[in-house]
Image (cartoon, one colour):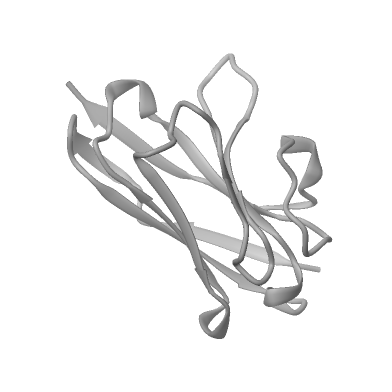
Length: 124
């Protein structure tokens, strides 16, 4: 069983930056792909990006490409989401998720374990 804990959310002005962290426990961290997702009330959870188990492959959805960067440190069992040039429409609860597979999935349905989420609010 994999457990995930996000941190780093908060309130930031438009144009600012935040870095989210996700610490994993259970399993062998480098053996599973990870993803970042977000959700706003009334909408489905959206996959923002993902990274393979070894970190060699990444994926980003168009809305965050060029602004967000996913990375991982397998020695620290931690994944990161660096968010730059934030916009008010980026406000959401951000979740990290882990897959049972090393290869990343570009579908939000490809992840098996979820954190509790961290709120990000971007003011205009």
